[in-house]
Image (cartoon, rainbow over all chains, first blue to last red; front, side):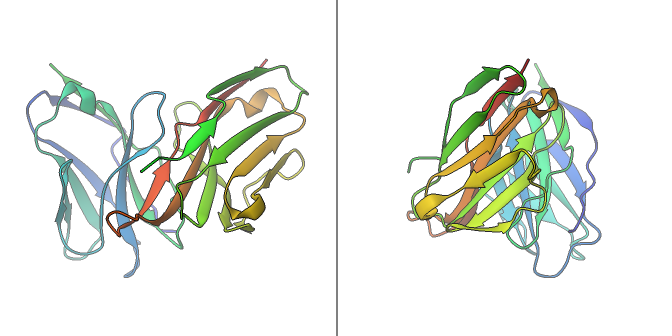
Length: 108
Length: 117
C-alpha cells in the first residue's frame, strides 16, 4: 500500500487559507488520493479526492503535483469549525489505510 | 440520502463480557468495512465485505472477534470475550456509487465508543 506522510499538527488563523501538505512518493498510476477529516467524536468525513488533475468542491481544493508524489489540500477560508484531524489517504484496492493525520487548529 | 447508521453510540462493559455492534450501510453500497480507532490514532481496517463475502479479514483478531453480513446489507461485529485493550471506537463504512451524483465514495458512520472496565 502507498504510504502517506503528513505533518503532525498545524495552526491556522480564522479567515485565512489553510494549506495541508501530504507526501505519497510511492503512489501507483491508478491510485486515487482522498482527503478526510475527523472532528472530535465523529466518524471521518469525506472532503475531496483526485487522481491527476487539481480538484475543487464546496469544501476545499486539491492540488496534485505533476509527478503525483505529493498533494496539498487547501481550505480557502478556515473557520473555527474546521478544527479537526485531516487524513490524506492513497486508496489501494478499494481500501482506505489511514495514517496519523494532521491535527489542524484554527484560532480566532 | 441516509448515511451509514451504527448502534449503539456508546457501550460500557466489564471485561470478559460479550459485546456486539450493528451497522446499516448506505442503500446500494455493496462494500462494507469495519475499522477500529484507538485514542489518538487513525482508524485501522478490521474486515471488508463485498456483499456477504468477507474479502479481507487479515487484521481481524479471530480468536475473539467475529463479524457477519447476512444478506449482504446490515452487518454485526462481535467481541467475545472483551478485554481491556479492546476499548476503542469501532467505525463502520460503506462504499459505492451515490444514486444522486453517480460519484463513487466511501462513507463512515459515527462509530460506537466501547469502554471495557
